[in-house]
Length: 255
Image 1 (cartoon, helix red, strand yellow):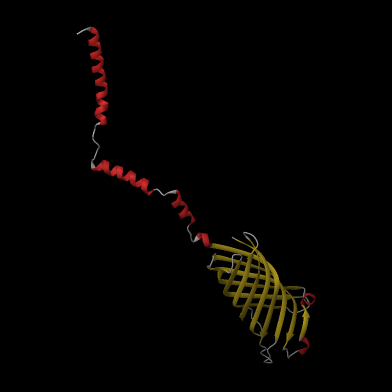
Image 2: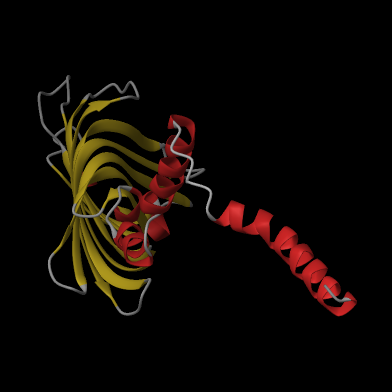
C-alpha cells in the first residue's frame, strides 16, 4: 500500500468517526416515557386553550351588568303648585290656600338601563302668588295675594327619594318614572307679618321624558305629583293634607 493510499484511508476513517455520533442521535428512538408524554400533552393543551382573536372579540363584545348602568342628570326651570287644607279647631272650618311658585329642579337617576334604580328629584321654589279661602273667623283674609310684595322672604323645597325605572321608548327617547318618599317645605317670613311655614311628609311620584340630542346631551320634561299628610311642625291648626304638582322643562346629561 502506497503512502497516498494510506493517507486517503486515514481521512476516510476520520470522517466516519466524526459523523457516527450524529447518525446515532438522528437514529435514536423517541422518548415514550409517561413523564415525556405528559409534558408534551400539557404544552399542546396550553396551545389549544389559548383563545383566538375572534373568541377574544366575542367575549369583549358580550353584555355585562356594568355595561347597562345608566346615570341621568337633568336641571330645569318650571312651575310648582301647592294646595293646602287644614282644620280650624275653634270654628271647625277647613281653610284652604293655593300657592303658585317658580321652581328650579334637579333630577337624578342611577340604575340599570331597561331596568330599575334609585332616583332623587328635588326643587327649590319661590312662592309668588296665593289664594286663600274658607277662613270663617276673619273672612277679610280670604282672597288673592301677591307674595313677592307681601313677604320679604319666601322660599320652599320639594324633595323626593324614590325607587325608579328607566325604559327606552325609541332610539332617542327614554322614560324615567319613580315612586317614593316626599318632603315638602315652605316658609313665608316678614318683619311685620306672622311667619307662615310648614314641613310636610308624604308620598310622591315622578315621570320624566329624555330626548337625546347628542351622545350624552338630552332635553326633556318632568312631571311631579305628591301628597303630604303629616306635618312635622306643630301648629295650632293641624294640616289635613297638601297636594303638590310640578312641571319642569329640563336639559341634562346621560352616560
